[in-house]
Length: 496
Image (cartoon, rainbow, N blue to C red; front, side):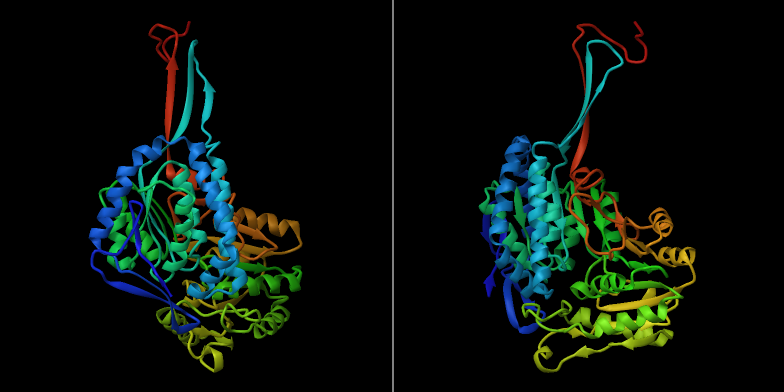
């Protein structure tokens, strides 16, 4: 069991209140993974003050030097990958290969953003006047609040921390109170890499206690949030009224379209991974399968057979395919949606129950669940469940399938399985989602491209790399004109 503290101005300290929270292994609730501070507003105040005081020196640190620290962090995370991956599995519940993949995303992002220390590209353009040059440069914004969820306890923090730091910002990082130990271990490695005191501050505690206070703190210049749509929309409204930069990556209700010419073995494999990977606890989980009516019955037979072969259990065991949901509250929510689906008239074709026998009795396990005969407007086909529940919907043709796919409040990720290039061209043009996969499931984003959605799935700038990605969130543009003519020149007026 780890005893964790806050990191404020380079020092590991307890909360002002002295109160603590326990982080529990969701596969075995008797196991306390760590004890962390239950921080309060005075802790937030101290962390923000430390970040504010460190900003000027960090801003003036050459970006390549900042990149060297991030490169060392990448090396350290890579060296400790196995340990950190096992910690992710113990604390969050996902199976070990996914826990290691979670850490690999952090490694990839650290290397990628370390390289940006020698880019952070602006633009140089010719002036319309002689003896004058023009350019734009990226500059840091200031102090950022980074608020992250529990389902990717190293990857999502890395998506925010490394671009924020390479851009020259200082940060106050508040991870989920359900997975604080893995997040702290990530921070420890960044500290070991040489991040200066006060540049990175870590505050633990429940979101309802300190999350909103941190986001709206007068010493915070910007907010990057990943979590539920309800919380994200509330924070966006609050921060908008305070003229703060904010990016919110929120929920999803992601479809996989399976057309009549799809390779069914491939589509079933993708649908299993998309629907039940991470126990369905991904914002990109494929919780809706929109299947062409001509192959619906055959696909369903194959999909049910594959789902029956998924073994529930502790994610550290090599034969486990589906781990627990994160906690009792989430288990009740998922089981509640299963009851809603049955009452709406959807047919419960597989699963639908919590499992408590044998080695499952001390964890929050729900068997993979499949609903058929689902109508597009049913709640189980419209609302994010965030659990191992998949709804199957029939479609007449490509137009009907895309209309069903788009007919939800969300627009994060989407997928189509088809061999006809015309189907895939129509899908990539018409699917209203931030991410479109072709002959692959709705999960599997890579860090060198932006990540985020439309509608209720995302607000503000996108996560991760590439044009329009996280660097646009964590920097602002400054345009510089230099006149070396030695006389007053008037743009748009001097025409000599």
